[in-house]
Length: 242
Image (cartoon, rainbow, N blue to C red):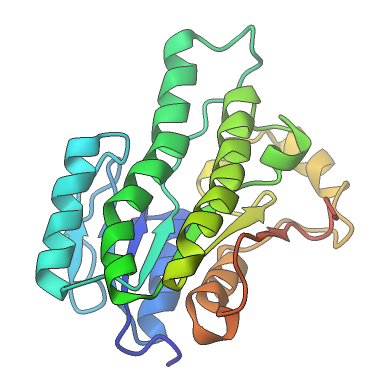
């Protein structure tokens, strides 16, 4: 119960990695709020997730309103996981301008807006953990995810380091995880051929599981990571090593 009594928000938390992370936090004792725009949040168990809200993280107004609800209810926030993201595959030539803008708005701008919304409360209490979702694609380029997704994730990882420098004097740790392909609904869009060839490039010989990423998030949210900030932690079975 390393997160006993902690208050957490997980964006994009109604399914996939977000739900795995939110569940791991709840099982470790945290009170968890789930924000999600694309999926139904009302059906989530209220005993495990006492606050749920449909939030488009690319909207400053929606983020500010949802953050105000959390802060009014709980009086502060200890953990923010910026997990909400979308992937529209395609090369620069294939992507429309609107596709590019939407990916950047949700993935990169959304991380900025949510961090901005909760940073003042974390600074006031002199502590906090922000965990961002980067990607192996942001380190290696498109792979199978496409140029917009990869560029947005590279931006998130750079933003992570900037936030860590800005917020560390206030006792706030900011780190990011950079998963490879994880077995979630998002990865189901890969063709069987892509999936098979992708696995062959992973030294451990398999794709990751959501619970493994959730375990890393739980570590970053807990006290054992108090001296860790500004880091981008790879979790990809050895496909990319630095």
